[in-house]
Image 1 (tube, one colour):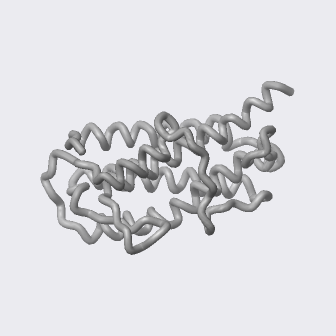
Image 2 (spheres, rainbow, N blue to C red; image 1 turned 180 degrees about the vertical axis):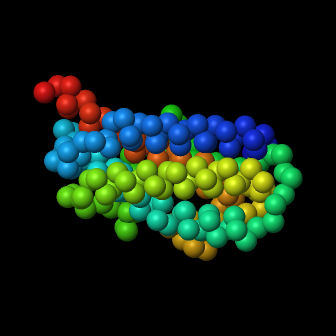
Length: 187
């Protein structure tokens, strides 16, 4: 993989997280519980289920990221290079490059009737935390910090890859949640 400018990468990721926060506030925050829990017209997940699924990944990754950021030394690294594995996972999840559907992993399948306001609030809290970690990462070496992945704690990805994967995964399910708004226009 080719090295990328770390500052530019982090800025791009911050912009994507900022867009997820803004969209969540504008599109989902003040919706009714019934609306947010209504299954997709195509039989897929409701808005609340999409966000709850993302929260389950945040529950896993954010504490690991926090610990590793706290435990690592500041570094003056200017570049980040994705590992083959990290680039593969990101490409798989990114809606622009990963068109295949995947079954949710055990432990990340959301219940069908959630307290939607709590789910939305937790998603916003996690996105603000993720934004904070992206900013802290400016002073870290994204190549050296390793984070275990949710499917096997034995496999670890570089922090830069985890950020890219997590935010691509968020984008994938934000798009899925937004597709539920189409039914509103059809009514």
